[in-house]
Amino acid sequence: MKKLKSYIKTFLLWELWQGLSITLRNFFRPTTTIQYPEEKTPQSSRFRGLHALRRYPNGEERCIACKLCEAVCPALAITIESDVSDDGTRRTTRYDIDLFKCIYCGFCEEACPVDAIVETRIHEYHMEAPGENIMTKDKLLAIGDKFDNLITKDKAADAKYR
Image 1: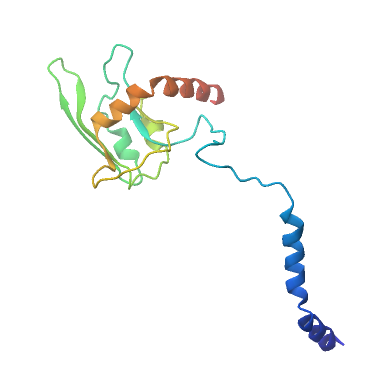
Image 2: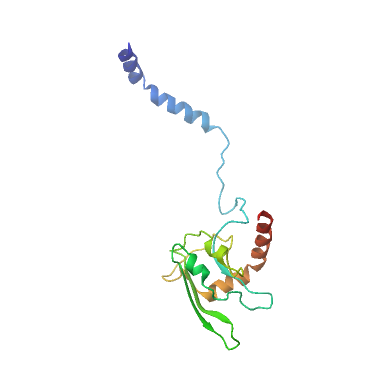
């Protein structure tokens, strides 16, 4: 009896009709596809995207070259070199992040005692030439200056959750 039933199902292409019925049922349902460049999905204030270095309101860079972010980075994507300035403060002379190595875990942001390095909500960036994946100190500071309002707003929203 089982064999006969199996032959009948094979002859009538039963599994094919089952699959087509599912397709037909879902064909007339409304789609949930978002047309990306025109439509944007809501984004969390905790989204981790492109890195930025922040400054104090007086214009001085926040990074004190403690190298905690470099030490905590699991991908070894951060390279820091520092020097002591004339006034006795330690500042970075080189702060590089290799975006190809970075896994965007946020450990660098959490380890920073002065909130110097942050990960912004910017995810729409690209590299066209070799070497553009290395974010230098100047590039990071420029991003921090350009998006300071967004970073400050996200930090305030994030403080609500802590």
